[in-house]
Image (cartoon, rainbow, N blue to C red; front, side):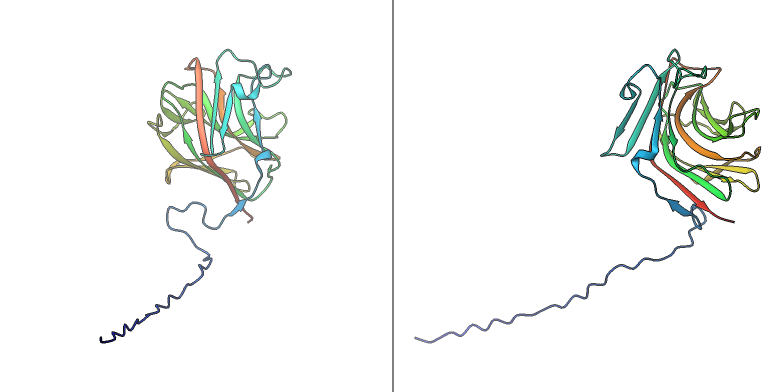
Amino acid sequence: MGTVLVLQVVVVLCVAIVAPTRVATTGSCNDLTAGFTKVEFPESDFVVQSPYDLPVEQRYRYDPCTGVRTFWVYAGDKPFNNATTTNPRTEVRLRGHDYTSGVWQFEGYGYVPSGTSGTSVMQIHNENTGAAHATTLMLHVYNGTLRYYSGEAVEDCVYDRWFRLNVVHDVGASTVAVYVDGAPGLAANVTPSASHYFKFGVYVQHHDVSQRVESRWRNVTVYNKPY
């Protein structure tokens, strides 16, 4: 009986595994954050302002799995505290990141359901006591159009879709620029103030107001750069 010798040839493939490297990018033409530094902040810096007589969860929801923050309020709701007569709101005030100089940028993905009207969804608040306005910029939604306050249209047809919003505030130049999905929507001169901070959510305004207003936000980030 013959003996069959089976020769097993083992071929070893050597695969070189190269660790990824961090590359400093200069950004493409639509990378609005190129040259800026991301500002890190914990969840505790997202301070919710909502009707003072209700639990926060009755007007605000945060889903940590999706990162979506949902804000809603009714036209007849109370203010956010009992010492003010301002209109109803459910907003996040980004705490601990007030700024007085440099160039600051807000970036976030917003969603406004159809039917919401007469509300601010994002603002730059200022601390200029006695100023004609408490804000440097407000973006309102009226009947599906995103507007600079109640005036110039920034973006049409914002209902029922996610849009990327970038707001760039150059403090020294006293200018703001607004971009929607990377496209320029507004450039405006603004009144200087002692300091500023960002807010987003819903804040009922003074005309064309729906009974219920709502906005949703995710991936909200702040960037800055010195001069």
